[in-house]
Every structure is written in C-alpha cells, then in structure tokens.
Amino acid sequence: MFNQLQPVPTDPILGLMTEYKADTNPKKVDLSVGVYKNEVGNTPVLAAVKKAEEYRFNNEQSKAYLGMAGDVKFNELMTNLLFGESDAVNSGRVKTAQTPGGTGALRVAAEFIARCNPSAKIWVTNPTWANHISIFNAAGLQVEEFPYFDFETMGLKFDQTIEALNKVPSGDIVLLHACCHNPSGMDLNIQQWQTVADIAKKQGFTILVDSAYQGFGHGLNEDAAGLRLLASQVDEMIVCSSCSKNFGLYRDRVGAISILGTSSAKAEVAFSVILNVVRAIYSMPPAHGADIVATILSSKELTALWHTELDEMRTRINGLRSFVVNKFKEKNVPGNFDFIANQNGMFSFLGIDKEYITTLKNDYSIYIVGSSRVSIAGVNDSNADYLAESLAKVLNK
Ligand code: PMP
Image 1 (cartoon, rainbow, N blue to C red):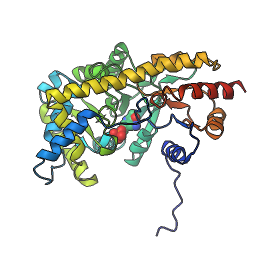
Image 2 (image 1 turned 60 degrees about the vertical axis):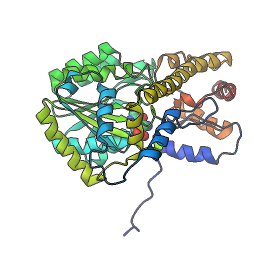
Image 3 (image 1 turned 60 degrees about the horizontal axis):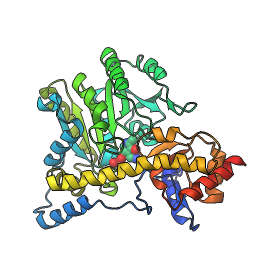
C-alpha cells in the first residue's frame, strides 16, 4: 500500500533548521525560524511560566479528560486578552475553545468554514505565512491571494488591497494578521482596519483574524486594536490565536479559536459545530500549556511578571530593528534597509535575490529563508558584525 507514495519535501523553513543544526561553523547564524531568541541566542522558558508550572506540579488534582473545548478558565481569560472590554463579549456573542496551538485553531477554523460553506474561498495576503495555504487546502478549501506587500517600496500596497477586497463576495473569508504580519512585518494602521471593516460590511464577507504575536508589536492592547475594532462593528468573525510566542510555549501547543456570532444564541450553535469538528480531529486539546496560561492570567503577581518579560522581548526585538539598520550602514551593505526599523514583530524581508541567500548559506553559514524573510530575533551583539560584513561582501560581489 505504501509503495506508490512519492516523498514529500520537508517544509523549507524546518529543512533549514535541520541544516543549521548540522552545520559545524562556529560563526553560523540562524535567521530562519520564527522563534524568539535572547541576546545569547537562546529561547528561554519565561520565569512566569516556570512559576505557574511549579504551582501546577503542587496543585494538579486529576488528569481526567477536560472535554472538547479544553480548559474553560483558559477560554474565558483568552477571550478577555484578545477582545478586551467589549460589548460583543459582554453580550455573549463570543465563544472560545482551546486548541493545540495557533495551527490547531486554524485547522479547526478551516473545517468549520467548510461546514458553513464548502465552496468558500479563503483570501490571504500576498504573501502570507506559507502554512495558511496548506491548512485551508487540507480542509478542501480554495485559497486565493490579494495584494498586500509591495516589494518595490517594502511597504503596503493598500490601494490594491482595497480594490481586491471590494470584489470579494459574501460567503468568502478574508484572512488578516492581527499584528506583526508574517512574513513581511507590515501591519495595517487603525484607519486601514476601519476601511477593511467597512468593505467587509458592504460586501458581506467574513474576516478571520490570525493573532499569533499579540504583545510582540506595540503592546497587548495595541496589537489587538484591529481585531477589537472589527469585533465592535461586524456581525460575525473568527479569531485564531496562539500562545506560542507571547508566552514562549511553542512546544506545549497552546492556542484558541474564538467565534463572534450575530447573537449569543447563534454563537452557541456555531460553537456546537466547532466542538463537533474538534471531536473528529483530536477529540480534545492537551491540558498542560493552557493551564500554565490560565494560572498566569488569573494571578495578579504572575500576570505582572509575564508583562515584564513580554515587554523585554518586544523591546529587544524593536531595538534590534534599529540596531540592524545601523549595523548595515556601518558595514556599507549596499541598499537602503531603513524600512526594517519601521516594521513590526520578528520578521522582515531583506529583499535580496535567491542566489545571494544561497551564497550566504553555503559560504558564510548564514541561514535565511528563500523568500529573503529574516527573523530579526536571530541577531545579537556577537553575530551582528559578522552578519553585516558577510552581507556586504556577498552583495558587493
Ligand atoms: N499564524 C502565524 C501567522 C504564525 O506565524 C504562526 C507560527 N509561526 C502560527 C499561526 C502558528 O503558531 P503555533 O506555533 O501556535 O501553531
């Protein structure tokens, strides 16, 4: 039965991660994977997480099944973290289910959308996180792109975005990144969110917001401003969230799917479909990571500690953005990279050709994804000179 199978290439980013691990060059630099790294290149467990784990170790009473929606307390706290003080939440129109990471949330959303409308098209930004396309295709849904990032100006092409969204029909889904757009780092400002909300209301399409980096851009509330604006104005929406980055819980697989319904009763019906989808995929999510998040968010002391640690991660990334731009200037890297300082989150495109990316990997052990997306958090004091000098050499050749 397995004989007819053809090997499937590994995900290019995960493939690079394997190559990087095997590379013995002591100067190697990894700018590929979207994982926060501190100044010594580690992805540490947050102190707030360690404390919550200690609490869990001492207080966990049972490992009996939790149910399809996962941890009820976690769901309530995540709803508040995402939507803030909101009429939509107060009126019972928002329902949240814990999922295995943001990816799990997106996959549940995909199956849910297929139940709502099997011929729905999913409109994604060009470019978007590559896995978005695989996840929606895997649920049998067609994915279409709309113009978003402009490689000429390294900014948005919002006029073209508007033009495209004005043609998306009712029954389709538009997927937007809440903040820290992956891979471009270019986010909508609040006026642009309002424009999108107006078009959604006029056209009748549904927006799915993917919130994978809340707190990594400008702050927890600032990074949720777009999705909160939508929630206060549209009838229905879907939010998929991840605690991988902001709680550093990558491998513990913590995320959530939230739906906003036109009424509390309608949201309840939609939620029953979500739970039915969950039952047939993984039955119920794992408990550990969500319990850690719930423990942190329900303790004033742990929340304060988490905020400090999150602020530290964000400040480091934002500082690195200007640091990289200055370092490139200092080392005479040809081209203008000022845009890096104005973008958000961990990613930006360098905008350099594939041949340079290959040379950087083969000759300098600098690992960058083929699209030229770099994970800024991979830069630190000890590799910045080497990175900028190598880039200058390769681009000046
Ligand atoms: N959405 C986006 C835009 C992401 O960048 C990621 C993680 N790379 C995810 C979702 C999924 O996150 P998780 O690891 O929680 O599945």
